[in-house]
Image (cartoon, rainbow, N blue to C red):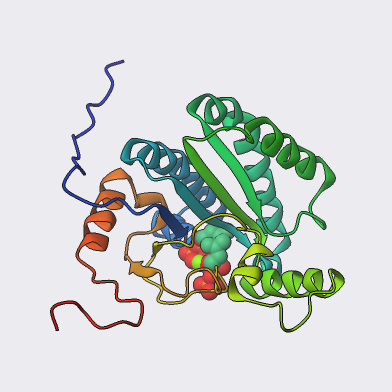
Amino acid sequence: MALRQKKPLDLTPYKVPVHIAIIMDGNGRWARRRGLPRIAGHRAGAENLRRIINACVEFEVQILTIYAFSTENWGRPESEVRGLMKIFARVLDQELDDLHKQGVCLHHLGDLTGIDPTLQEKVRNALKLTKNNTRLILNVAFNYGGRAEILHAMRKMLADNISPDELTEEMVSSYLFTRGLPDPDLVIRTSGELRISNFLIWQAAYAEYYPTPAYWPDFGREELYEAIIAFNQRHRRFGLVAEDS
Ligand code: IPE
Ligand code: IPE
Ligand code: MG
């Protein structure tokens, strides 16, 4: 079978964000539009994730953080939650070797306790196998909530007897699941929603937000390229005065 030729997308004149974070939303609506069950949308979403990881490697993005399952998503119907867990397990089984060969280093953001022990084991193995890879850091926010993350950090700081005088913003960052990594430059949300939904609420304080109407399974390599171009048109001021004002 002839491979479909990929359209060359040149990013040479542009600054590629070091860290891109994505709220992968709209799987359910993607499926509904096709008269399919929601779970078919989640399957299509998982396949798309593979394409986006490849595109991040191609575009030389250094860190990709994806929102895969939130602490709030437990409230969905049990059958959907079960289906999602099955998809995560299958993606790990099927993709881990390739991701490792590709030089992807997996990190987990969130809480593994409360997850099915077999899946926990798969995640731990994946983290261990890929820990020395350097091509792309892939943070998977799974059973993740921004508030839960901050609460977890506060509890650890208290347990470490950090005194109020010692406490700095850098120290808080060092207690988060993203410790040691730079904050996201660009946060993409698919499906047209304009909310953060408890994602990286500390780390994305100064990220550029890019909402797009595309449902997640339709957000491919070219759409990611467009998002990077749009990022280049933003003027990040970080609270300062623009140079040309
Ligand atoms: C995102 O798609 C996937 C997860 C939250 C796990 P949704 O399932 O939220 O899709 P919509 O928003 O219902 O279309
Ligand atoms: C955010 O999407 C969570 C993930 C993408 C994993 P949701 O679909 O759960 O968020 P809301 O309900 O629209 O805020
Ligand atoms: Mg949604």
